[in-house]
Amino acid sequence: MLEALAFYIFAAVTLVSAIGVVASRNIVRSAVCLLGTLGGVACLYFLLNANLLAAIQLIVYAGGTLILIVFGVMLTSKSPWVVFDPTRGQVVGAVIVSILLATGLCMLLVGNEWPAGTAMTASPHVKDVGTMLLTDYLVPFEAASVLLLVVMIGAAYLARPEK
Amino acid sequence: MGGIQVGNLCHNVGSAARTMMDTMDAIRNILADQFWFSIVLGLVVFGGIQGAVAYAILLERKISAWTQDRYGPNRVGPYGILQPIADGLKFFLKEDIIPANVDKALFIFAPWMIFVVALVGFAVIPWGGSFKWGWMEATAKPMVVQVASVDIGLLYIVAVSSLSVYGVVLGGWASNNKYSFYGAIRAAAQMLSYEVPMGMCLMAAILMTGSLRLEEMVDWQARHGWAVMYHPIAALVLFITALAEANRMPFDLAESEQELIGGYHTEYSALKLALFFLAEYSHMITSSAMMICIFFGGYLVPGWEWLNTTPTFGAALVRVAVFAFKIFLFICLYMLIRWTIPRFRFDQLMRLAWKGLVPMTMTLVAAQGLVLYMGWSQWTTTAVNIGVFLFGGFVSVAGGKAVTGRQLSLRRAEAMG
Image (cartoon, rainbow over all chains, first blue to last red; front, side):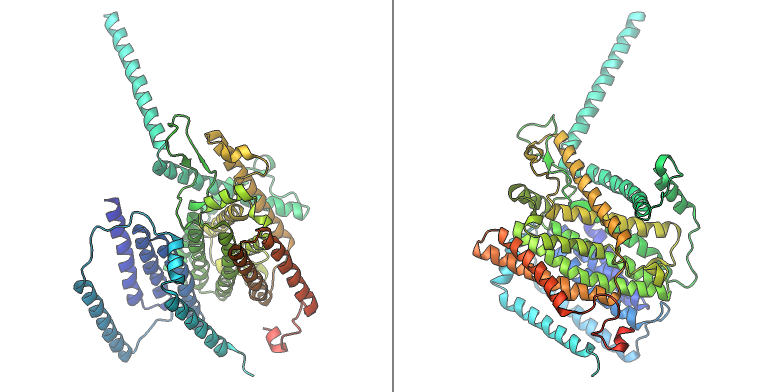
């Protein structure tokens, strides 16, 4: 009962702030709404006993990625009164991509059997997650780290002082 | 007639006593249930921290006065001990100004955000180990003096404290003021940079104790001695990053009065300004508690074996008192540093983080991993710590570059900013 109530609250927070992300015309407010979405999803993870995933969601997305986005946005938009005005072409493109994504997700949702009643009673051990990352999923893990390294080198190259 | 009345009276007294017994039993049952105990403890800790914050501000003013050879606040109550109440009242009664050209929603949101984030961190701090009430059965599970014992303990604190930058950044941005904006930008860059060495220090500690739970880290230290003996430099770096994360001197570039008026909170007044201060001091208390749990033995006292083996409520209270005393010492250290060490310049700040602290702590993590893998004695890391410290000192001396003043390594245009 309590859990269901918490689920609906967090789901509502996630959805409402997700609507805020796309509806807001001020780009920093959009970013703040995105914070609500990411936080709501993290709370849902907590509710599902996936503590590690929730913490990583907060550390990586809310605390790391999003703050970089906000940082970039703040440096580029000079005043709180600059409104975000997409061109018609951008809107059409966004609509097409969103429809494709939505149909894909809906097909995934409908086309699969979702096992019911297999709630985790305890959080999976951090140790197990770590072991899996460094054994079964080593290649994707390392590929992700190489990708990040490439991004870092690229950023350093772009940001170097002109010689 | 009289007999009936006396009988009724006796009956009433008896039932009153019985209801009282029932209530007592109910209270005892509630206190013996970890869920309700945690809720009560959460409220107590919340109140305790708010009170401690009020007096920490007084302590700061007293220490600043002592450092500068003044009296400090001494008009309200004996020795000024009622000053926090007067300060609080003043903040409540002042006019709450919202300037015309601010982003109103974010302007109001930012102080609350930073305040809430600073407060939820204390949930996983083990304040006093575990104990049993006198009325509990011997086989019952002992109560834990901790609001929430989650398996990701330390990561929870890191996750929550990584959100605290939003309050500063959004507050500064929403103010629509250049000085506030500079403060916000500085705060964002500073907090992101200092999170890296902080994570590395925590990683060294996690590798050493083999657990993310703060209570297990304290237990490990009960068996092996305080972790600061094995990783003194990691403890020092963690303290430095805690100063930076709390935007305290010498890292308070986000608000530096002389350059930015008040930085990100220039436009704030009354209760909203108070929330920023409450958040800063709460953050200091939470981060000291975290450092004490990881490196300074939590509620342990060397030589007092009985302290962490006695499972009574009284012993738990003593443990909490020991913990509180250690936090007090840390807070005093924070304050002494604020009133003695001058502020860094921004390029010095960044160089310290990326060229100094990050390589040092990375070496420590690698050394700790190697020690674990090879099964060497834990004391090896002490040697590595000292080595890293000496090497760092040697490099900075042999480099011969000026630490303060204009940077000769920079071109003139860069040095002038």
